[in-house]
Amino acid sequence: MSLHSANGSHPEFDSRGGSSAVVFPVCTNPLLRLGLESILSETVFVVWHDIIDGFSSPPAIENGLSALFIIDASSFPSGAIDLVRRLKNHAPAARIVMLADAFDPDIVPSAWDAGVHGFCLSTQKQDVLVKSLELVMLGEIILPATIVLPIAGAGAHSARHRPEEGLFDQKINGHQSRKLSSREAQILTCLRDGAPNKVIARKLNLSEATVKVHVKAILKKIGASNRTQAALWATRYVSTAAT
Image (cartoon, rainbow, N blue to C red; front, side, top):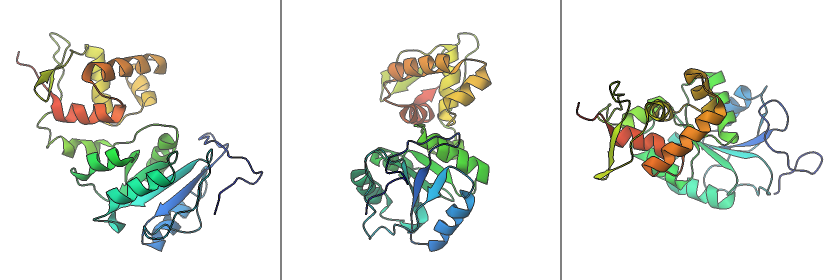
């Protein structure tokens, strides 16, 4: 089964109300699909009429169609990672979000490596969930602070700014990384908390272009390939240098 828009073209996602994205519920509970349909009824998302239960073959998705798989983590307690890999192989261009009441800190890095683009809590408010899904479709990685901080081991490796020098002293796997400026340290903290560039720019009174430049510099300095790696790196390896 192939998916097409009404006019035969493949619309790109537009969060401002233009072209929509098709949401594929991946779960074993039909009520989740109905819940998503209700929550997303007045948004740019269209919920697929069938659920993907992890066993049946997902529908064929042609290149160019904006597609989002939403995986109910509780439906697949022991096979979620394999399912993510299978969906990623089936539709490489599709975006993938994992939904749960809470996430096991040990599962998040594995799921992210497998191809998950966002981790959303089912306890989030409706507007927060919708905005998170929109950001995922726009290319952002969603990793809420409530997920990131437990990975950090209850703050054992929390990052703190040194006012007297404006620098972080970071070590990863025993190797000293290049030092960050005070501004880069602020932005890295925002990345750790899962903030998108727009939020960071507003919070620090910067332009988005400036934030992007800083993020690129941060990734290079700490050896990360994307903002999610930077967030995980910050929670795990950034420590306060001795004064």
